[in-house]
Structures are given as structure tokens and as C-alpha cells.
Length: 613
Image (cartoon, rainbow, N blue to C red; front, side):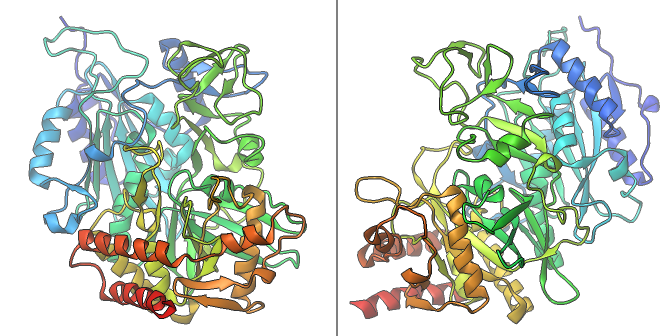
């Protein structure tokens, strides 16, 4: 029989000044039946206590303090390693409002099903209450939430990824909007027959739901302990729910990086960029430019919220407090800034363990260790048939450890945006850099963004995936309405709107080799975009947008031939005709809510290629 007894409701602390928060905590405890309820204060003492408990329990491995101080390794269940898009739902009141890019469930039916799953889901566990802020405390753009979870891994990760604890709770006053976010790993320590069962290193459930209720601004996540499904301040709140809030309230919630680039003349420009997974997003966010005189400072690597300021310009913040980055492919030769950022005080998930108690993953170093313990706890050598680290292995670390962090990164009301970039991983068709003809055309560029599928999402690796504005898995409402909101924002901003450019670092030659060196050399494309913004260089018109004159791109010091440059900026007619047919089909999938302005843009681009014939 069970030795666990649900917490006495009268013993649950009610620490919020907001009565609705307290009532929700009590109601959730009544439903989930934890042994106890703890309000998290976000302190270092709390972090140290929870990580020590997880090390003792076997959920974390403490890394070598001399090599990687203050850091830990977690290994997930092999069935819980990535976002589960097939189990992610938008539970809007009207099915059509979720749109064809989202999975929809009736909100009443979903609540009933989730209630049955959450009933007793925390038996034997501690229920943690995690107040958190998305954005600098007290900022105009900042939003607040409370995550309830039974996972200490989630608590410590939220402490790295958000401004969590008492400081955030103090801002959730009776008149403050806040988002309730309920999470359980779905592994109570009492089985279906009422008997105790031991805990496991990575508790989860093979039944998984990540449900969003846009009208009531609620999130419920069951069955997964993985970051994208369990750290509910991230994709769930900061994109799916926030995108709905942004539409209703006149701002923007975007899957974008945020950097500041300072020119050799000392002028600073703020740049956002929408890049699907595995398209160099983190490398750009933490770029060390290879051209003398340029400096890039990091504001954010993944999510941006933007709101028009009093001066009519668009102001941006990074709503997160940390980085949840993909480890494989991040290395000293590709992203030294990221490597310096994670030198200490980092939680690593599903990477390999070295014999001296450090971490390793593919792409981290030029040399491969002779022996490792892989992400599943097995011996590994270079002759092993499986990778040492899972392709979607992660590091979680506070942003203020980044050596290139901008002094403006916690500006309460954000920084004004000069340029918006769109970029995907494309072998053909898309040039290195080009500018939109106007805002509507820039929206067309964003709506037709595509990239090769990555390990961060379910599906076949390498498959071309439509990812408009890098928001395909993250828009919390109909994609056509989301595009319409972009068009409306452009109309509101008028001539104060940021300039829009598209980039592609991944174009290849006929033999499959990359045409562009990438990484720190990408500042050369940004340099051209900034000079276009300043009106210092002209452009070449093309049906897809305004291309650089080849002589205006700074390639001094690069080993790149004139033929390669020409290929980088070529716009193949037949290739683009085929792509426009694909776009037409995709717009048909989105349906009748595709804004008329984007259909006009499609027709104009198609007409431009007909004129060439």
C-alpha cells in the first residue's frame, strides 16, 4: 500500500498578493494531490539545495568542479528528447481560429481529459509553485506567469531561463495580468493499484499533452520533462500564448534573435532575426566578427517581444533570462562565445560525459575523445555507431554569463529595432543577402521562409519544411491571421518600420560544398544591409528583391572566386518558378485567411520572372 498522503489543503501557503493565484494553487493541489507544496523564491540557496537533492536521487550528475564549476548533466528518457509537435494543441474556442498549422482540440473536451490525467499525478511528489517574469522586472513589455510543476529539473531550469521567484511574485499584484502554466511529468510515486513505486532518474509519461488555451491565456503540459515541453515560459508562453496577446494588444511576439552591431565608425544598430532551428541562429546571436572594427553584442538568442514606443519606432526585448541552446555543432571553432558562456554554472542535458567528469558532444572539439559515456549512459568510442550526444542535446545557462552580452540587454522598455532579418538553411535559390522592396514584400519573404528540418522537431531530417517567420510550430492562432497582424504592424509603423532583409549562409555549389564561409564572416552581409539602410550603396533589382551589386560586398581577405560570388547571388529562373508553385500550394493549405496583400506579392514576383522570359 501507499505511504503517501496528499497535502492538507489548510497547510498550503498562500503567498501571493493576487487572490486568484492563491486560489489556483490550492485548486491545483486538490487535483494533483502532492505530498507538499513549495513556493519557489528563486534564491541561490534554493538552486543549490534542489540540485544537491537531484544529484543524490540520480537525476543529475555533478560535473568536475575544477573543469566545469557549478555545472550538471541530466540524461532524459530516450522517449522524451524534443518538442512533441504532434502532441501540442491550440485549444481555441473556434477550431478555425487555430488554423491549419496547429493541432486543435475542443477546449472543454481537452480540459476534461487533462483533468483526469492531472488527478493524482503528483502523488508522492512535491508541487513547486514558480512565479516568473518574461522580460525585465517592471518593464512596459514584460509579462508575468506562474508555473506549477512537480519537476525539480524544471524549477532549476526556470531559475536559469526566467526571472523567477519572489521578485517576480511581487509584481503579480491583484490587477496584474498573469498566465497560469500547469505542468506534471505524469509519474506519480503511487501506481494505479495504490502501491508505492520508486522514482526514476527522468520521470515522464508516454502519454503527452502540451495544451494552450489562447482565450483564457492558460497552458497545461503533461507527460514530458523536456525543456521545450516543460519550461512553460519558453515556447508555450513566450510564443504561442504571447503571440495571441500581442495580436490582441498591438505588439509582436517573435521567434527571433536580438543583437546589436557596432560599425567601425562607432554607430550601433539593433537587429532582430527569424531563423528556424539549425540555421546558424545562435552563432549569429553570439558572433565574433572576422572583419576589423565591427563588434556584435548579444541581447537574445531565441525570442523577441516588440512594441511600438512613444516615438513610433519598434522597441524590442529578450523576454528570457537565459539560453537553452543546442549543444551539438556548438564548438570552439564555430561559436567560441557560446563555449565561454557555458564554462560554468550550466545544466547540460543529453550530452556525453568524459572520463574526467566534463561534457562533450559532436562538433565541440576538433579531436574526438577516445572514450566517453554517451547520453544514454553507455560506453562510447569513436567506432560506435550512434552519436555520443543526442542531436538535440541542450545547455541551459543564464544570459549574463555571455561575454558579448549587451549592456542594453535588460533595458526595461527595450531597444529600438533598425533591421529585421529572415534566414533559412537553403542549398539553392536564395541569395546570400537581399532586401525587401517594402514592408509588404518583407512580410511575403517572412511568410515564404523555409528551411531543412532539424532534430529539434519531429520529422525526417533534411526535409524542406515551411517555417514562415520561423513561427510554424509557435504561432498560437491561425497563420493567415498572424501574417495579417504583421501587415497591420507595418501600416502602424509607417516610415519608422525597420528595414527587412533575407539571408542564407548555406547555399552550395554543384559539388555540394558551401559557397560562403559563414560564422564570423557573416558580418559582411550585415555590413551591406546596414549600408543599404543608410543609403550608402545602391542595389540591383530582381523579381525576389533588391540584391547587392557584387562589388559592394566586402570580400577582402576571403578566398572566394568571382564565380562563387556570382553563384551566391544568382536567382535561377526555373528554380524560382518551381518555388513559386510550391508557395502557391502552401498558401492554398493556409486557406482563405491568407492576406490579399501577400497574394498580390506572389503575383508580382511571378510576374517578374515572366518578364525575364
